[in-house]
Image: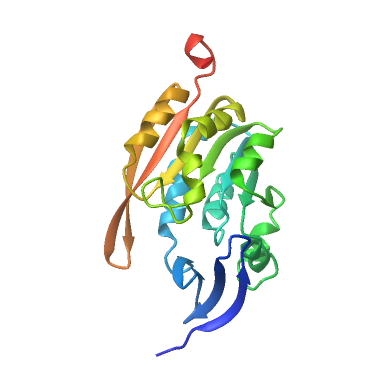
Length: 230
């Protein structure tokens, strides 16, 4: 059996220990011993980006804001869409950015060297509250959804006050997409209180022979008309 090779570790501001490992050709990250992400299992991140980008298919020079870098697979798929002009990524864990940027994760430097991509180390709630740019798509993949939080502080990201901030950074006709590992009816209700159109979507992912169903909530701001001024 091939052993885990520890490539790096860091203690985050909230006390969580992040560790990057290499194992049998794959790279994986654990938080306090629990696996968060792996290059061996990233179909969900790719599928997430494919589904989320659907609302901007007819938007030229689209600008996308992504909450959560991870190992870069969502960003990679977003940049594969030729209509995307800029993709800004907000990642709260600085070690993840460094491991991607310095080549500890081998595919990282080429991905982050794409001139259309910008990665900043910040809290997504603060970044959106202070944002001056406007986006066609805001894509949030920062936790497992409101019902399965890794960090309790992220609960606010699924509630109405924060969702109103996301609408303010969208261009007319823009969309917000939020990933959840399970159905989230309270999130859907909060989105309907803020946005003009809300569409819950499901997609299946085969995780090494085990099929999982994930949820994506896509909310749109109608470009004009009385309902857009909520």
